Image (cartoon, rainbow, N blue to C red; front, side, top):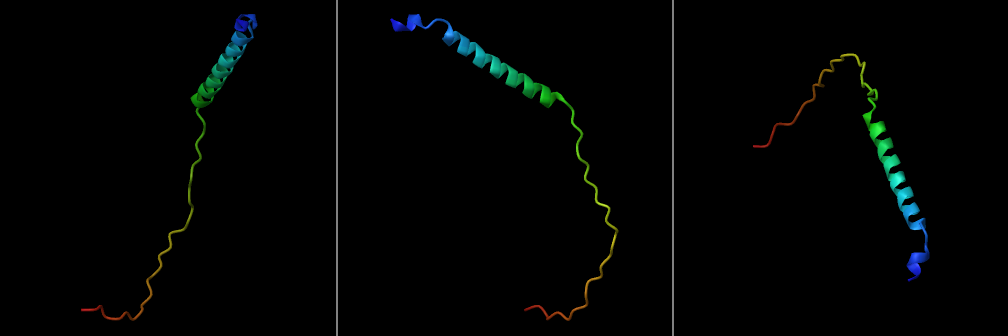
Amino acid sequence: MSDDEGGGSGWLGFLAGALVVVLIGAAIYLYAGRSQPRAQLGLNAPSVKINSPDLPLPSPPP
């Protein structure tokens, strides 16, 4: 019987929580909707040809 004496604080908490969830959802939606510039990766390395060394290699096993 004591549950009826609480007033509207339960509903007020529920509505405040629902409002927070809606605000977070709207923020995520707006943030994800923006087109953000992507980073471009570029390597400016010169083309260098390296000759393999002439090493005397042992003969392969039979």
